[in-house]
Image (cartoon, rainbow, N blue to C red; front, top):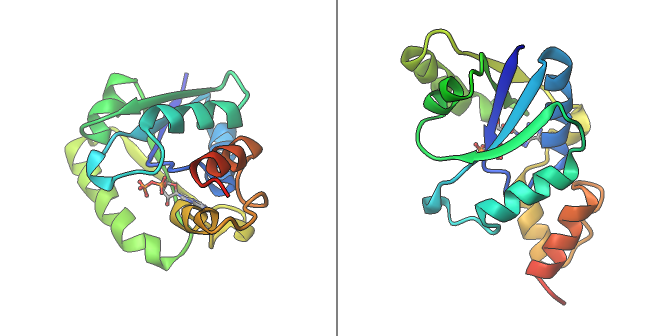
Length: 158
Ligand code: ADP
């Protein structure tokens, strides 16, 4: 059983994340999508809300959703994951992701970081753009699952 961990903030989950999760599911037997609980980031959605939105957006037994705090590699070991999945959209992602991957490799040599590219239509998409658009009541239904559209409307009522 090959398990991969997909860690992120997911504030909120977007179609770009879902594209990466689907690609990863073709390579691994089980994907654990895990929400980083990092209070210093001051997220729009609580960890519980983010988990619930991810659960509603994914409907296969292959996916598990959880949260973690602390080091990603420690959580990867705890869950018997052999890989950490990260999405690469553009060169701008590369430097940070490269640094993280090298450090994680140093901390845990037997865990491999796997970078996946989304469909090009998602390369410009990130959660912070979605939060900004939603704040001004723009239509984000092309970019996020329906449950996220509803959750954003509740956060930013007209
Ligand atoms: P983080 O705060 O750790 O970057 P995110 O939830 O923003 O958390 O992203 C988690 C992972 O998903 C990161 O590897 C990020 O590069 C990737 N990602 C985010 N948005 C997209 C997208 N539109 N297409 C592909 N990968 C993405």
